[in-house]
Image (cartoon, rainbow, N blue to C red; front, side):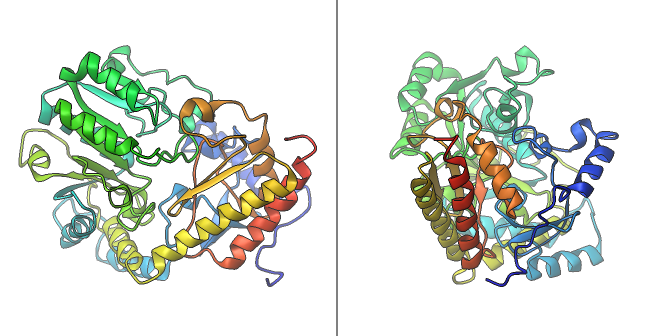
Length: 444
């Protein structure tokens, strides 16, 4: 590998400018950030302030270069600043930033989603994953005439009041049980089950089945670390909800077009009633969607009476980025390359852990990956939440100083892109082997 590919400064002052930038941000923003996990509270040290990105890497304001396995928390499946995405968004930008009126690009993006994802007939574009899941649940209540919903401990579906119950991710990272400011009444109809526990879900339906509007689930959990569904879990949810007249909502904000070319619907062969999308579908811009079967989606205004609206929904620049991303992703070998890199990465990390004698569980599903410092594979939030004695923090900091940027929380997933190269994976595994070797004396 060329010596100049992954250079980082080795002095103790390698984060000087990031530190100054953080101090300035603290003066004008709560916690100095605009989303909690970015603050590095879970892993210590100064948050890295990014200057630019290209391909699989970004450069911070101190001039340090990193291989990026966060990729803006998932959207950048083609890597940073992919030329076709940049070209499409610049062309759209030159025509206007926002119209608040229909554009052909909105229809085109919806057509791509409908054509690729089984079960999807109608699509409503929105601006964020939170907005998509919130709207999908309102729609489920409108379509069924019921009030209660079922979610899973450790699954994060955005920060709407009714969903901040055992929400994993940033809430778990900060050690908050839920969130102040959420009225008790907002969550009184939210029922919580353990992920991968069909018996627990059935028990909730036995008690409340006539008033459960929907079950919402991350088909591959990405907010308690990455946790895959057990065989039969998702099909079991489909069976239970169908039996009781409730809707099944797959929250594919994270997994959409990532765990398979058409997402979890394709990978697991599930026939959901509604699906939410975000991240990849916006190509790095604020765009998301909820979608589903025609007879359900036609409850949405103006076709029906369930109201939901948004000034910037279907923004022309965001839709251009989403269209370009999904079109490139359809090209031969693009998605497969990202998935192959994920497989290579977790294979190398597991081997490095064994060699160092450090308990490590690395796994991947499609282009998502995750790391747990546990003896056994993790299947639910209760297992994920068990303290790992600082192992992930030690690993994160060691890798950061070697030029590898991982999620700054043990409750988050990692993401691979088609821009990651074999050299990137080799460098990462070699760095991990060194870091894990240094951890072996104190973290077993």
